[in-house]
Image 1: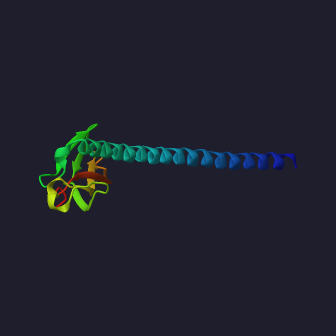
Image 2: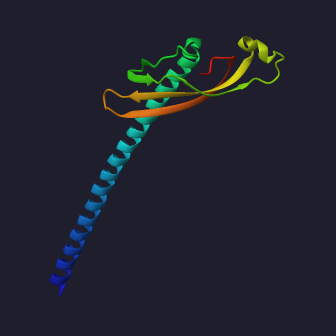
Image 3: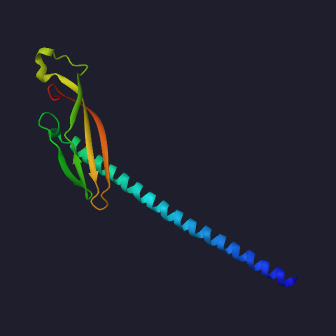
Length: 144
């Protein structure tokens, strides 16, 4: 009877060893998948930050608005950022000014613009698109 018990113990230990090995392998696979997910998320956030930086640079350039605005391409932190032509969505007379409508050239307007930045990572070919709305007070006639 003792010999039978020793054999059963060996079988139970082997089964437990297989189960523990499966747990270890699955946890290693899960951690590597999580690492890839975090890496992709970090790359996505980096692309969005680079697009936002290009938009901020465009906002600091007054020549980017009006009838002569054009699309442009820039490189930010090694990533190519394509900026679409800024589009004016809406213009309304600015409140609090006493200029009359007959002097339309000097009447300020509140203009709503849409800026679109498209980022491409040359290393991974990943891409992201960032839309930014901005309201700018400008002289009348800058919003076609």
